[in-house]
Image 1 (cartoon, rainbow, N blue to C red):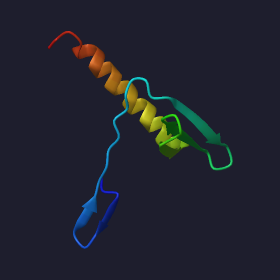
Image 2 (cartoon, rainbow, N blue to C red; image 1 turned 120 degrees about the horizontal axis):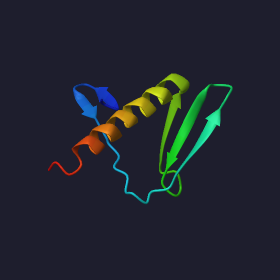
Image 3 (cartoon, one colour; image 1 turned 90 degrees about the horizontal axis):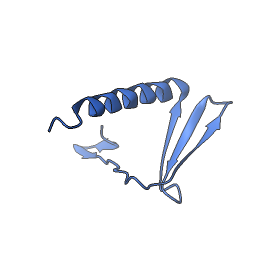
Image 4 (cartoon, rainbow, N blue to C red; image 1 turned 60 degrees about the vertical axis):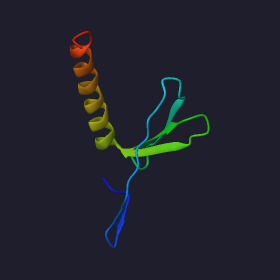
Length: 74
């Protein structure tokens, strides 16, 4: 998904996290969202509403299950 598209130019990015990257979260009950902070100084943040947060958890669980099912098959 492009972060920015204008006049045929699309800017995209991705983030790869090392195993030792610190993580924390903050919640806002008023807006029903959570902000996930990655990196010592929160260099990368992701804010998700309750529904999207649930979708992320489900997707991550599916990815872990798939990785577990293929471990040692390579």
